[in-house]
Amino acid sequence: MNQDTMNRGFSAIMKELGLKETPKRRAVLEVLAEQHGFLSPEEVWRAARVRFKTIGLPTVYRNLEELAAGGVISTIIHPSRQLYYYFCTTGSGHHHHFICTSCRRVEDIPECTVAAMEQDIITRTGGRITSHIVQFNGLCRHCLTDPNKRITT
Amino acid sequence: MNQDTMNRGFSAIMKELGLKETPKRRAVLEVLAEQHGFLSPEEVWRAARVRFKTIGLPTVYRNLEELAAGGVISTIIHPSRQLYYYFCTTGSGHHHHFICTSCRRVEDIPECTVAAMEQDIITRTGGRITSHIVQFNGLCRHCLTDPNKRITT
DNA sequence: TGCCAAAGAGAAACGATTTCTTTTTATACC
DNA sequence: GGTATAAAAAGAAATCGTTTCTCTTTGGCA
Image 1 (tube, each protein chain N blue to C red):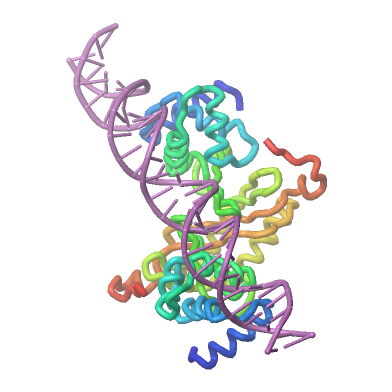
Image 2: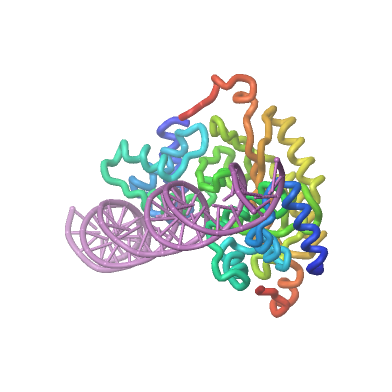
């Protein structure tokens, strides 16, 4: 994804979500989009500070939250229960992931599988599902076959 | 589950896990077993303090963790990302849940569904799964049909 | 160009969870 | 039953990810 594509796409995204297009907000999104895997809020902050001498950690938290609420980025709950963020290139909409705890690679889980599971639960319990956490943690095939292929960035 | 059954079962559980059978540890387990739904560590602590004037919150945390590691109780990640605990009466082994965020009722999700999903991901990605979070949050049929049926304890 | 609500800075608070040190206690062995 | 020992617990304090607060700045529209 080149800089132009990114900028054009990001402007549209901000507009759609009714968010002002500020440099800080764009930076937060850019940092994530340039990344292979998921990042912690603090990691996003450190990367953003390279461009802006002053950018507050609360600003990063707020923007990550807003962008995640808008479905632009997705949240990853690490086994440590820390929250990480990931830029979904697979387009908009709710996602589920298989995350590599070693290299931080993220792979999509087909929505249909989750939808079927959800329908099964609704039928079985008679309840209503308001949200869910479906996430598989492990080692991707790259880390599995050759630990040196590990991406640490 | 009456007191006798509980005590006999609990002793065996402690022994199996190689844990000393202390009054505090038994209390933590009893508190959870007497409960309809999931509890926070602090709620367990408050309930346990009724029996013991002195029981530390760290003690509760430690015991909950040990018992969860042993598979005796299961963890629930609330949408707020707070950790809750739940005593599984469905026997040992890994479980998945549909939790009611209103009355705290917990219903099991059939393991087969999750297993199929896991196998699908392994085949598709070529990776290895080391852990997962599969949890559906919502309102159970009781809370859905009649909010007054809500169990708040 | 100026207005104004949204956004951000920086400091401070928050709160769940963990760590540390000392004391207590359950269990194994005599 | 008495004792050694390693696990367990108390209580206080630290940790640290996250949020809140107040004041200042700024993007977007009239």
